[in-house]
Amino acid sequence: MTNRLTAFLGILFAAAVLPIEAHHSFAAEYDASKAIRITGVISKVEWTNPHSYLYIDVKDDHGNLVAWTCEGGAPNTLSRRGFSKNAIKIGDTVTIDGYGAKDGSRLMDARRITLSDGRSFYSGSPGDGGPGDPGKP
Image 1: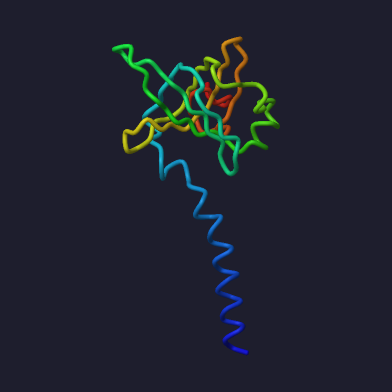
Image 2: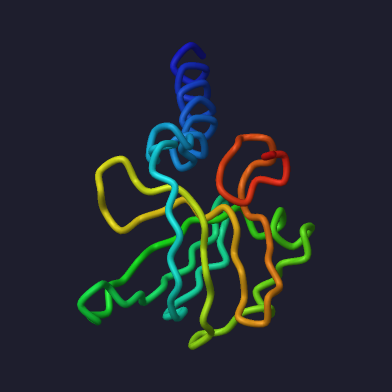
C-alpha cells in the first residue's frame, strides 16, 4: 500500500509542477529597463497558451530583414481585450511596444500591438509601467 501511495503522490506532484515550469515570470526572461518599439511584417502567429507569439520581420538600419519573436498574453486574455487571431494575418504590418530579453536576443515581451489601421491592443499586465501601460502617466 505504501508503494502505491508514494507512486500516486509522485504522479500528482509531477502533474502539479509541470504547468508551473512551462510558465515563466516577466523578470526571469525580460529586462524592464529595455523598453523597445519595433515595426515589421507578421511572418507567423502562434495563438497558444499560456502565451501567444507573433513573429515579425523587421528591417534593421542596413535594410536587412531581422526576425523578432514577440510574446503576448494568453489568447483568452487578449480576446477579452478585443484582440483576436482574426484581427491579424500573415503579411500585416504592426508596431509592437514592449521589453527586450535579458540575454539580448531578438525576443520581446509585447505590451501594445498597434495595427496598420491605427487600432491598438494592450497585451501586457496593467499597472506595471511598461510601454503602452494604461496605468502609466
